[in-house]
Length: 401
Image 1 (cartoon, rainbow, N blue to C red):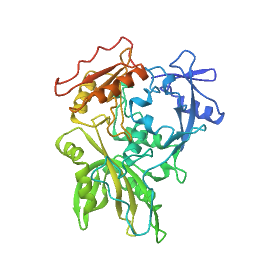
Image 2 (cartoon, rainbow, N blue to C red):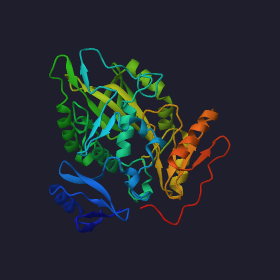
Image 3 (spheres, helix red, strand yellow):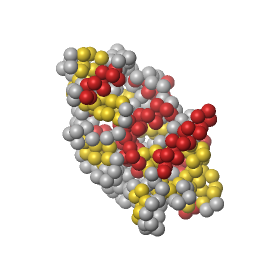
Image 4 (cartoon, rainbow, N blue to C red):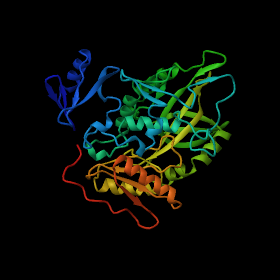
């Protein structure tokens, strides 16, 4: 884990006084330095409720050493490059302004468009705005949940994932509203504290009760899907961490969701130790019943690292078994363009791994080669139909922190 310099003080995040030191630095408007580089890389401190966190300055991801948790690979290796500076704008004060391709409010009696059967997660063909799925990818990216868990020897429980996502949502907003004000992520289920947890959930939900005849504010809900259950007028979506909080779904919406996300739902049903993450816009009616307006899904492995296919899951298992250090590429809004599935960060130079589809043609290969030239990062092409797993290079003697 990387150390920081704050003024003349050098301090580790493991230090007992770390939180007090950075809180004092925040009050004094001091800029910490990340000591992954000899001269340090400037950071900033953000306040989140009653605690402070050190965050990377906008546009400095590549300035950090690749062994540092603040390092990120070039944006064009993932779908981040398509949204950064467009629908995701990092401001000089440390806040992030988002432009969404979905609504967080509902006007009139007409429901929001149901999820499309044909497109990845929104009805529009192309957009530079954040769709629901790319919003989930952004929060996962900011929470560093796309990085190998072994890098920091962290135990990834739902409590850890939840707190990381809440921190990731801090200081992010649209022109109209703060994301944190709309975001509901259920607490870990605990029967001994059920009443307290339920009371906090109801307190949060109360702000979304309809008070206007034609306008309703909506929540942004993120959780792990447990199951779909038939209900009186359709179905209800049950989250694993909030089993007593049913989210209702009209039957035609459920059918479109089940068709569009059939592969993900089959993987969730057929495999153990995977998590089916859902992000949904949700409204309340006058009876305090929650209803899905739109939703998207993302599969993760047992360490909450996303994957798009069983081939990627097989490679994730192999990387985890070998305790390799890597960054998982996230697609954001990109649909068909090749993106690096993984970037190995425990080799010199780094290595981009592409899981090749059976229909990859010359244009597909040319695009990968162009990315390699632009980023100066070599690539490894894995054809799953030709070999069970790719032949990975050995780790270098220098391990990431």
